[in-house]
Amino acid sequence: MTGEKPRSPERPHWVFAYGSLMWDPGFAPDATSPALLHGWHRSFCIRSHHYRGTPQSPGLILGLAPGGACRGLAHRIPQASYDAVRDYLYRREIENDGVYFEVVRPIRLPGNRSEASLVYVADRHHPQYAGELPLQQAARLVRQGRGVRGANLEYVANTIAHLDALGLAESRLHQLLALAQIAECDPQEVSE
Image (cartoon, rainbow, N blue to C red; front, top):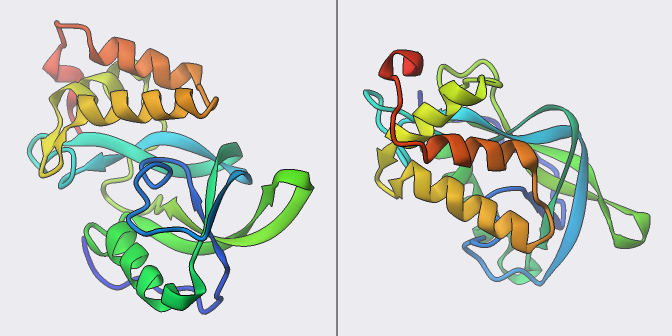
């Protein structure tokens, strides 16, 4: 399910990063800062049919799901290349599968400063949205997934390593990785 999704007409200076965008933004930010987004949490909640899996053997990738709060990074978009960066972010986050929405939400930066930010949230009505799966089922999807950007297990391990290095360790993600690394998996629990 690809296709056009509306772009925000707002022009915030920041983009909130909660997954690979934190360490691989794909552009040179003017600045990078720790950031907090209220109302959303980081979750392996999207079946990947392209980057980390296929339609026949989906993987599982990160999205922002409603509720809680998410610690991540904010990248300041360079004004000299603002439109090009926005186009790049739209292609990266929206055009491939259409699994995310682009919204503008307030984030908290150090000093309790509030800034408007681009945020890419999971589309809960998209067929690839998996929601909060039981850890065993999520682990099996991670273990089986392999797409154009490689093995899903490598993506999860890399994500966790980067989050840990930034002091953003999350126990549920560590549990997911540990279960995904177990050799024996029952393929029956992976069913869509």
